[in-house]
Length: 194
Figure 1 (cartoon, one colour):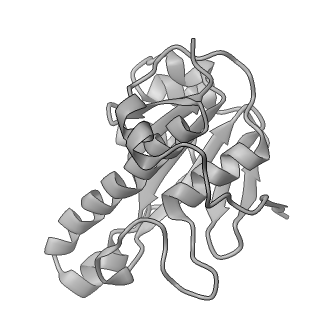
Figure 2: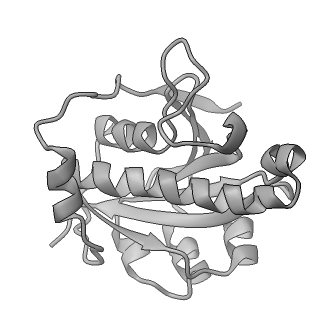
């Protein structure tokens, strides 16, 4: 039976302006091992795929509101899936998968050093079922929108982040025990940086 962790309500009013976050955003690859709080993790998940209250719309645009993305979270405490409608995490495993994920990403050591990796995976059929082959493009565009939200939110929280697209899809799928209909697209590594 999976464990559900309810996340604190996301903050929608920050002292950091959007312009400041854009200006400060840089790829950070040197992280300290300090764990993030559930408040921080929840804020990052909300920025990526948060759902408006009493609405089906999310924080990142989606072609036809098909929402093909799912967000997986990897920490030292295990693997979680973000549930946008409940703003909660579902624990999928309690094993620390960061070392295995590092190997699947061709040895990029900052993955195992960082406290948090957000993995965007997609069910392409949600979008291609509506838009045909053109939907493939829309899924990748959506992943970019969602990931940029995470990078800017990380900056607003005083955290560093780095985008990772260099990984072996099959290996990442195996590490995360993804079903065949989900494909890994993008990873964002987040943490306190030095």
